[in-house]
Amino acid sequence: MKVTLIKGDGIGPEISQAMKEVVGALDLDLEFEEINAGLSVFEKEGTYIPEALFDSINKNKIAIKGPITTPIGHGFRSINVELRKKFDLYANIRPIKAPGPLELKFDGVDMVIFRENTEDLYAGVEEQISENEAHSIKIITRDKSERIIRAAFDYAQAQNRKKVSVVTKANIMKLTDGLFLDVARDVAKAYPDIEMEEILVDNTAMQMVMHPDRFDVLVTENLYGDILSDLGAGLVGGLGLMPGVNKGKDIAIYESIHGSAPDIAGQNLANPIAMLLTLCLMLDDIGENAKAKMIRDAIYKTLSDKTNYTRDLGGSATTKEITQAIIDNLGA
Image 1: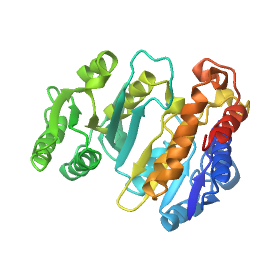
Image 2 (image 1 turned 30 degrees about the vertical axis):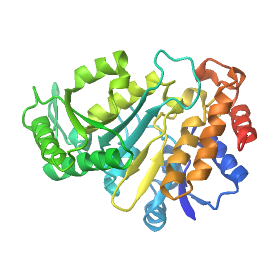
Image 3 (image 1 turned 120 degrees about the vertical axis):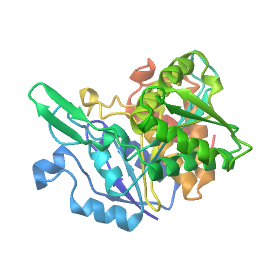
Image 4 (image 1 turned 120 degrees about the horizontal axis):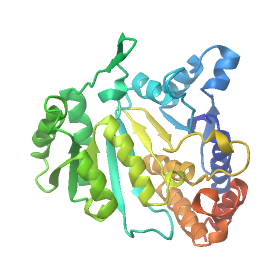
């Protein structure tokens, strides 16, 4: 099976290489078609996303990518956002669960965040009113709200999860967030066996750090989902352990949710686990569940030994060392 691989920049090439080594150790029937995007591509080709990448994703229907740096406050727009808009990847799905026996404040955190991926403030509709004033337009539509909410309820039903928490700020943004909430109320009627909870985003943030076990599946808008999924990652060991996927009707781009960490790029310090767990999400979706379980079990066993911890986990293991430990634990 051919999969488009976007290595990204910063630590992206290093964790992509770790992922390829694990794939090689498992003898998976995967062929990576490598086409990059980002600043390094712009410097060579004059474009941040080459047309060959669009063609490859359209052809293969599945891509896996490393992180790509997005300039803050200036420069080009997020390539992640551009890819999501180009292929209408409306569902950003982020499981929040510790992948190993880490020393955490909370045990048993196991939630999945469904984040609408194509509109809200991340649509990037901005207007410069004057030198001292700028506007950003929040866009919420019924159709796009319904498909992400229905995806969350379908997932809960398929995975035998009992509750979907719909996260908004509808007490203040009564038209936009109010529309999202009204759609959720309508969709929930078709799932009588699943509890629907209405909760405000600020309360959600507080509850996640006080009682995270109360959450099961959460569905929310673009900005809230971005923030809450990072908060959730902090509950279970950090962004270096968290996978994610962006799904549309017939195309999926799998990506770990952390940034490109340019400060440690090329230093053999990056944690590849998020990339490996992202690979597991992809393997689950293509029917390679047994191989995905082997990787998850190997990660769990690897994290049982603190000498394997990378710097982000408080240890000193290198990218290559933890990757080799995971490979050694495959099938153990």
